[in-house]
Image 1 (spheres, rainbow, N blue to C red):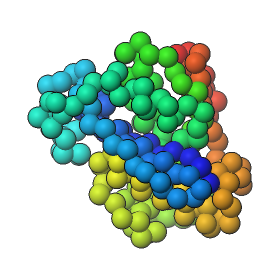
Image 2: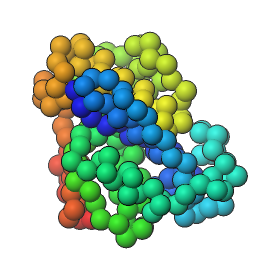
Image 3: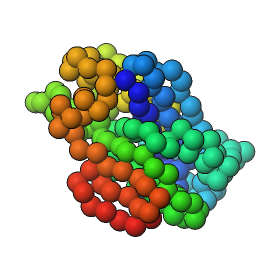
Length: 199
């Protein structure tokens, strides 16, 4: 099973304010590496106190961090042509879309899905499908609201779903669980619900 798990943390309520990005790379059904970037957002030094209370990342922590355009070349080589998952993907994909737009960068091509939707299909009847409760349910270690940790935990959650479905093919897993896919492409974006918006 090959896919990427992605997670953003933001500095403000504005979606184009990423201050941390984590990507877990899964190859052959194993998390092979987890990449984590602290990012100095365009809004620096302003950070919303509410956001800081969630993730603990301060303006001082990213004062010497690279800007988005400095890490994008590395990030896009991972995403291009891949299958990407995020827990509550609507949030993370809005961050990516808005950040690319505000920096005048073109969309890469990849498909994506939401692990919340997948979890609802695979484990119906749970009281919560948040990442914390789902990781507790499956015994997955989690240091919540740090991007690399959340990305790795999301990847492990998808791997648990693959084990339950007895498949090592991400496409078959999503097909069997009836999980809809969204997509980024050079001309725009399509949500898993089918809404299309231009880039």
